[in-house]
Length: 166
Image (cartoon, rainbow, N blue to C red; front, side, top):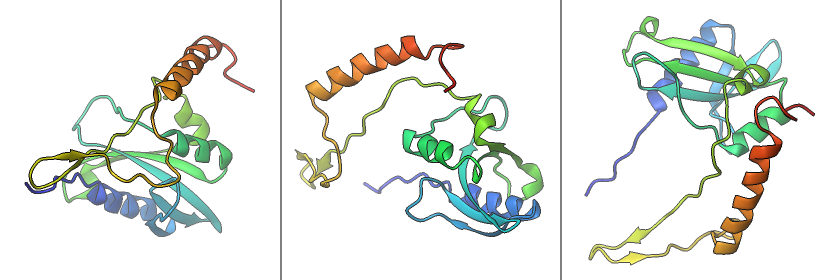
């Protein structure tokens, strides 16, 4: 079975062109950063997180990882979110909107923290637990219980309109 990959590379290429049309230079993919692109404008370096929608119209919907949001709030002056949609080769058929961190947060909600899973499968369809890296946090019943309790507290403490600002 061929490995299925979903690439957002074409959208990032369109974002690069659009950003350049808005005065950004040196637009390039971010490596080992909590963002998708790095660009320069007015002698300032920007970290840009791209959120691409394959829907032709309607609401934009997606996820932002906590690591991205944390990086964003700690770099408010040079971190941007760029939403885009389109599928044609012609950039004029695309929609782009650039947000500051403060503006983008207005559109975000916390649902639940997520877990990632990885299950190895050999040629005989046998399943195996992969070798996880040293830096990962392994899921456990204890971790899940503690996270759930904390999440329930957050829902009460930070519900709309209450304690959402420092």
